[in-house]
Length: 181
Image (cartoon, rainbow, N blue to C red):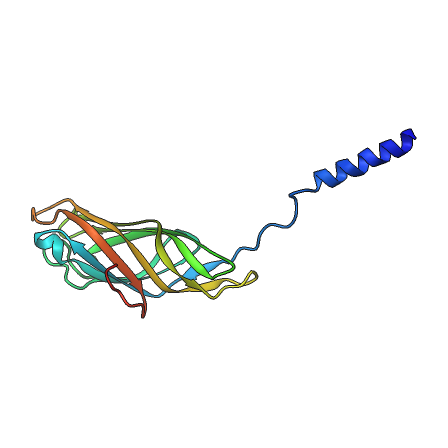
């Protein structure tokens, strides 16, 4: 009888210890790349005239690998050209396996070289970056119809006091329609 009780307890212990240790949920990797257009809304003076196009690469989370950048209308706050500014950014997003919907966040910063010290920062909070992915549980998908919305700030005002401001922005990937929400 003791042997049967011991075997029953052993089987129960093994069954309980196995709970919740199944395979990890399937995760879809998604990469973002290509050209994105940013429209800035708000601000006054020179700060109200900014808009740009950029190209970058990133997978799921991390630093943006920025491959191209140009202002449409840099004006007095930023000089266009090879040495006109330095760009950096990060992105973090996840893909819902069942719906292929992508959500996440994006930060993008432009620091002027001429005039020195102006810093434009775009911040799209968690949930502010959306799109779709064609990934599967075994392949990395590609973000499409990506849209990031959030707030922008311009600080520095080097040489022109109107190069300070804030507002909202929308940044759209490729052929996505960039409309103000």
